[in-house]
Image (tube, rainbow, N blue to C red):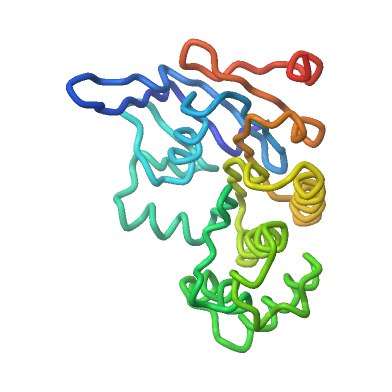
Length: 232
């Protein structure tokens, strides 16, 4: 089987003051289309760095990142931006909704950036709000919603343009335990419903049950572990 996402000898470091901090070192990773992958590790371990590389926000110091047959390392900044708008959906810990836009307008924005027409975008937004149980909050502003409701909107926004890949960075980190469980269940249902590939970076053990594979970072490389080990 051909890997949908393939990292080949990928290394990444950052300059911190007068020293160079190595985050990832010659990482090899293969992810199949439709898989849900969980990346476990404490804050600062390299999970978010990997998501930034897969989305094309950052470039590796060395190595190749292949999405299908496309090598992100060979794209210029504009090409990576267009790739990200079209093929990536983001879910963040702090929701990242635009406070001056209504819920509906937050959902419509990704479609407009991809050239969608207003009528079609509004219809798609209404469908996604129904999917996440917020059809009655289309005209509300984000600050009128609870944290769980804001994350539901963020999930709808991430999926609205039907991206191939969903990248979730600590999606339950700003929620209470019960709300977090509801959000994880919703993400799992919607992503599998549309056969999307999802990568979740987290330090929460609650997410492990929905993973096809679980990885942790050891010596700056991602190593697959079993769910039993991850739970231990």
